[in-house]
Length: 207
Ligand SMILES: N[C@@H](CCC(=O)N[C@@H](CS)C(=O)NCC(=O)O)C(=O)O
Image (cartoon, rainbow, N blue to C red):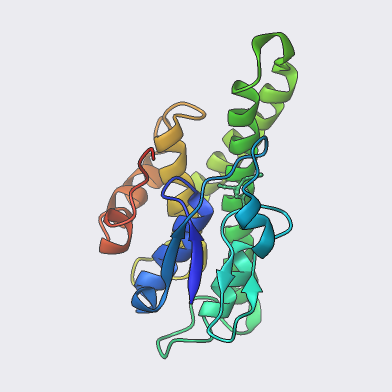
């Protein structure tokens, strides 16, 4: 398999952390790609018409995107306990947690892209609205971390990986300040989760 890769993408990181945790990492070749909304990679457009990272090529040659689809695919390839429960309420809780974390990053990315605009074109109302989404998502994650049901490190799943990669990205880009402030349960959980080898080996860095 091959994956279009960038160290800075939290969605790529989610897939790689997933692959490390399920023992699939060695089967996935990394293809470094640079892309942005204003300078889309022409190579990436051959694999994903949306020109977004990540895309994954299966051993059969099919290109898959986006990160939730890729993770569900990888979940069919390993022999361990499923990272996305196959059925029942727990399946939808895991997928919801992933959607919340991915949505948090997507709102954060929109803030970041906005900050890259020429100042004359900056739209502060837009940025404030997106930051509101990020803060509300973080507050919701704090409540879930305090509740603990979906945050047990003894039962790893895709939702937790998505949360950790989202928080790692906020730290890396400095979006929305320090997410730990007034969120002690989330902070403690993240400190423990980010010590996992899958996380320490995928820390983002500027390329
Ligand atoms: N929903 C997509 C989001 C992917 C995404 O937004 N990737 C960013 C990098 S973090 C990207 O490639 N952005 C380039 C663009 O929007 O043109 C997924 O989960 O894979």
